[in-house]
Amino acid sequence: MASEKKFQFVEADSDNASGIDDDDEDAKLVAETVEEPTVSLCGHQFSSLSVLIIGGVLFAALVTLGLLISIALGLNDSMTPTLYLRGAVASDSGACSEVGFSVLKGNGSAVDSAIATLVCLGVVRLQSAGIGGGGTMLIRNASGHVTSIDYREMAPGSASRDMFNADSSKAQLGGLSVAVPGQMKGLSLAHEMFGKTSWSSLIQPSVVLARNGFPLEKPTRDWAIQKEQQLKQSNPSLHSLLFTADGVPLPVGAVIRRPQLANLLQSVADSGSGDIIYNGSSISQRIVDAVRAAGGSMTLQDLAAYRAVLRPPLSATIRSNLLHTSPPPSSGATLLSAMQILRGFGPLSDSTLSFHRMIEAIKFAFVRRSEIADPDLESSVAAAVATMISQEEGDRLRAMIRDNSTQPLSYYGASSATTTAPGTVQVSVQRGEQEAVSVTESIGSPFGSLLSTVDGIVLNNAMNDFSIPNTVDLHGFPPAEVNFIKPHKRPLSSMSPVIAANTQLNDTIAVRAVVGAGGGPSIPSTVLQVLIDLLDKGKDVSTAVKAKRLYQRLTPDLVAIEEGFSEEAIAGLRSLGHSILVTNRSIGHSSAVYQDNSDPRRIYAASDPRDSGKASYGALFKLKKK
View 1: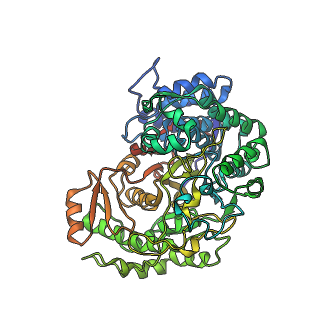
View 2 (view 1 turned 135 degrees about the vertical axis):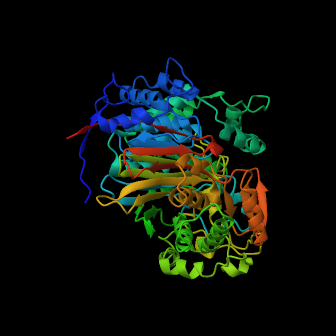
View 3 (view 1 turned 60 degrees about the horizontal axis):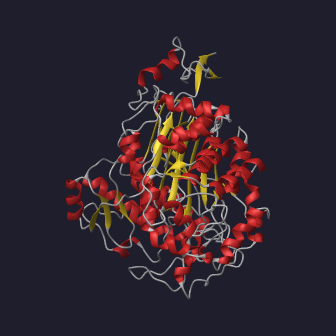
């Protein structure tokens, strides 16, 4: 057994913001490797949103101090690898990553940090996340135990299998498209089980952001422009938030204020948990009113009946890596199925053959995604998933892959179709060597149902993630019956958060990677490619996150590949029979944390430039040998 090093955590002194002692050998590493900021204000690097946050949270001294320290240690605006000590937060928004890292600096847990980051994203990334949606959170505590919290949205009690038969468009927009939201129930359960700091302190930075304002970010503006006519027709108040009176989209950087949401978040902070959303309060009533006014049937009883669910994670050992991911109704099984198929090929490379094998594995795995659904209401799911992620099934499907050619769609066993919406956010957090959170949230399509409450909650359209009878996809495949609507059922989700651990260490199984992605049905393949780049190809986390990607969804039967992908590989894939579509659109967006297990003090993080994401990081504590 390796010799044991023991350290004690000591809060960083205010006059030593880095938390590093000059005579501390274990801390000197950071002084030598953390990049100096290149854009400065009063000697430190700040984003425009950071300034607003700092000005607004002076009353919360501990959080603000942590935020200032995290910025001083360097919010990395470039995509070059940056070295961290003991902790990092990666999310879709650099400002929200700062909020989450300030919680780590204040001795909060990884779950505390994730909660603060997610609530912030609900304010800043209103098109993708928030109180009106749901998600799945994968948690590894300091002792190495992993659990999953399912807070996916749920169908109202009045929902039925055939409710959209007459008009399937009502599953996408309007009151019937809204499922019972789960975010605040999920975050409250996570805090109850794993929180260290007060609930109020995690919500308060977002109260300040919503009230004082925040710069409009490019992804929100881009989606607003795409949805402009729908927003104008369905939600004039949301339209006026993002456009001028003349209908001109506000520029990136314009300050957006959400005072009604600030008041609501203050109530959530003061109440001590998110239950105020569900317990029949005036906030609950206004959610129901907004849904029913738009033709929906949600009731106060539906909100009161909602529960976040603890589920055991799915796990598989792929070579020296123990992978944990979220179980159904999330799509972690799809990811593990592809990994098991690829396992027997050995480490992949950037060769045409490796990309071909990856595409073939994704096809086989995606076909079996049609067997995933809410395990509480569909008895067939448990056995189907156990088969999907087994080594034996991986071996069987691997033997069917032909290295000299792709095959017709029927070869992979496709018999039914599924789909999920693209509006998602990802948060990846690591604290120390063992503690980690990977969490994905969504409100469905961008801006969800296009409905919002008078409190500023943007409501999901998660009912569109169910399969609808009597419909077919582009290839004539019928919908997956296992994902048909039932009362109080949770729809299939593409979310596939992962925590990977290194099983080769002698004295402990330490976290190796924390990965997840947004992007609807491309999520499993996006996470797969980031993991392969990290674990097989040995790329640094920034390179892995920004690498050009491909996506094979089965229907339509073509491989979408981002511009800038290897021309040699594209030509090689075409020669093997793949139909290739080179696209200028982004395929997924990932946030990842990676730990160098050769020296557990080194933690790297990166967020996807495709979605303007940034990571926040730095020294959490001084390390003093006992």
